[in-house]
Image (tube, rainbow, N blue to C red; front, side, top):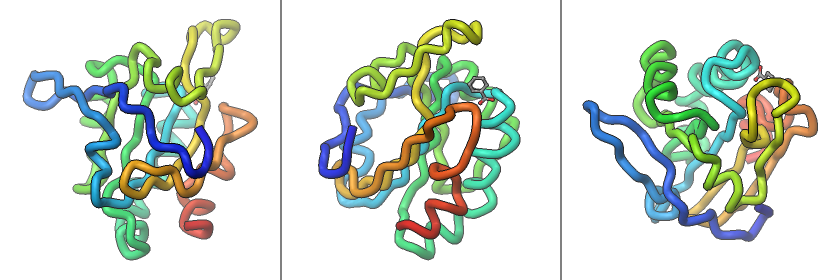
Length: 159
Ligand code: BEZ
């Protein structure tokens, strides 16, 4: 995935009232500006304590800068992502979605092999500003266990 690319059309998932929704992020971003934040897994320390809280506490600042929706896309199954979302209590306009089979990560060329960490194949940690399905900014971390260029503070300065 790079600036100018269209997002992959392979679906990601979310669990709503016990039903699995299949979501095409190109359709989800139609006519909108979204910030897509991919994280290696739900409940991992960096994601739960640093990366996602930054977006939770800045959702209004992103809205003020023209971001309609923030999507946290976790490389975990949708049952786990639902439990994570319930714990973190997202504000409106912040959505938790699952890429449990890493098909979106693979289509985006962003898989990350964390087998040596006991986590299997996951996703790179990145943030992408997407307008109408097209990637306009793309910040991928060189160290997936840390948050710098894909964090909320940094993204607020670059979008
Ligand atoms: C994390 O805390 O997000 C993390 C931990 C191990 C591997 C990758 C990510």
